[in-house]
Amino acid sequence: QVQLVESGGALVQPGGSLRLSCVVSGNTLDYYDIGWFRQAPGKEREGVSCISSSAGRTYYADSVKGRFTISRDNAKNTVYLQMNSLKPEDTAVYYCATARRFVGCPAMLPTRFGSWGQGTQVTVSS
Image (spheres, rainbow, N blue to C red):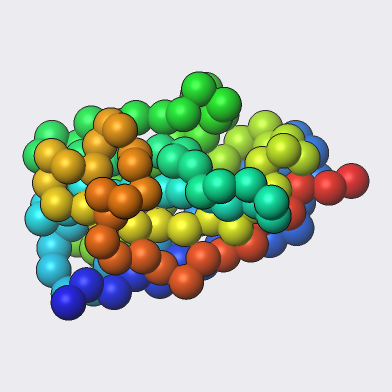
């Protein structure tokens, strides 16, 4: 049984930065691929970034490449999403999720991820 808790969402201005955290309990991070997803009202859930369990390789959606950075701290069982140069279109509820190793990354298909956090709201507005 794995549980995930996201935090760090906030209201920020365009061009600002935010760091989201995802604390994973129930097992160590090297058992899972960890993905960050987001969902805006009226839109389907989309993959944002993913970090693989096997080698720590990172993957990004084209829409966030160069602006977002995913990382992990294995000692703290925590995955982070550093978001820079935020745009209004980044506004969404952000979720972290786990998939079996080699399954989640780099495709970031939501159906491949079995455990999800509760989500944290990110709003980018002036």
